[in-house]
Length: 56
Image (cartoon, rainbow, N blue to C red; front, side, top):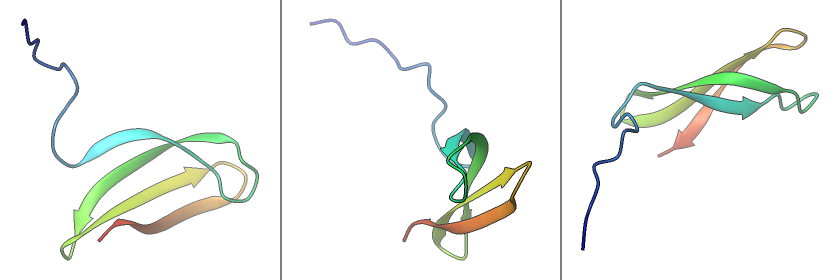
């Protein structure tokens, strides 16, 4: 069996894609740790910024 190393970035912070909760448009997002929780922060050009718990 051959196992290849993943080229994906491990750990946080991490940039990813998400959707605007208002209009559903695809937008960039940042996942990061804050106070022991994993947070997601994203900004829609039409609806502003959103920050929420991604994982706790």
